[in-house]
Amino acid sequence: QVQLMESGGGSVQPGGSLTLSCTASGDIDRINALGWYRQAPGKHRELVSVITDLGSTHYGSSVQGRFTISRNNAKTAVYLQMDSLKPEDTAVYYCNADVQYETELIDYWGQGTQVTVSP
Image (cartoon, rainbow, N blue to C red; front, side):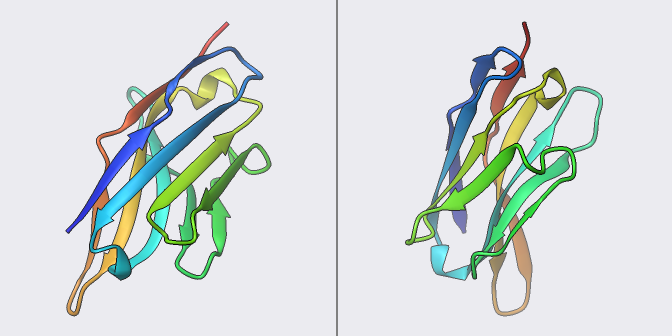
């Protein structure tokens, strides 16, 4: 199993910045990718960004150019630097780990952290 713990959410004005952090523990050697998803009220959960085991990154189109994902060398933490925040970025942000076992790939999720962008 993998345990994920997010931190760093909060409230910010439009145009501001926040950094989210997520620490991973457990079967970290089996993690293929770490990422961030978000879910706004009444909407489906959507991909924000992901970083693979090899360091490749991918961003959702709505955050491309404004958000930056990174991780530490030990692959036990993943970060999301969010700049130029907009009200539509308001959501609960979830950390995600794709974990490969011998016969299955399992998604693990953190408990979520609220990000609110408002004047």
